[in-house]
Structure formats: structure tokens, C-alpha cells
Length: 119
Image 1 (cartoon, one colour):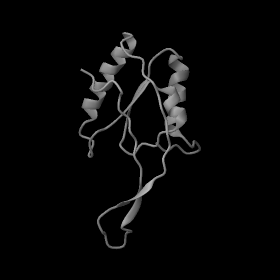
Image 2 (spheres, helix red, strand yellow):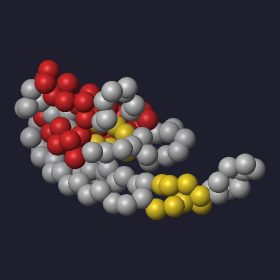
Image 3 (cartoon, rainbow, N blue to C red):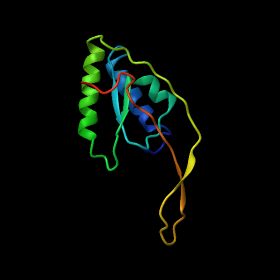
Image 4 (spheres, rainbow, N blue to C red):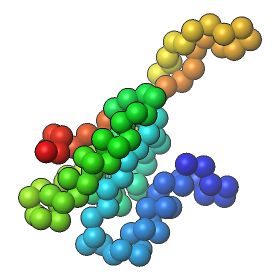
């Protein structure tokens, strides 16, 4: 998310949500495959899940998964744990397009629940 004048749009959005709902209300978040995840964002949410597909045809499925996980958090069945590690980006190959470079930077985010898919 890009917001003029704010360097970390997701973290600012989450900070504002957290300010409204308080520290005890669980927050879950659905992410794009190439999300820029910051330590601040990780600290403000209980669960982050990334889409499994590109194009993003699994938006609904991930929302259902988050809903089930949210219920399990509220019911006290699970207590999510967080870990964050920023890794360097590496070049990725893309097909040759006249007038465009063949290499671009890439990134990876792993945002799966350690509890597996929601049932």
C-alpha cells in the first residue's frame, strides 16, 4: 500500500485499527503475494495469511480461512505466535520483452498459519 507522506502504509493502517479496537481484540490480515511486511505490521496483527495463487483467485478461500482462524482465536483454541525475518531480495528471471530488462528484483513472504488450514 502506498500512501503519500507515510513510509509504511500497512503498519499505519493497522496502528489505526489497533487504536480503535484495543490490544485484546484479535486482528487478522490477508496479504498479496508480494506484500511488504514490516516488523511493525507483524506486531499489530494476530494472523497474516498470503494468497496462494496468482492471479489471486483464492481471495475468498483465504478470507474463509482467516474467519475460521479468528473464531479459533476468540474461542481460545489457538494463540498465534509471531516471527519476523527480513531477507535480502534476489533477482528473478522474466521473459524477454523488447526494451525492458530481463531481470528484476523479487521477494518472498511466508504467511501461513502454523496450525495449518482452518477446518
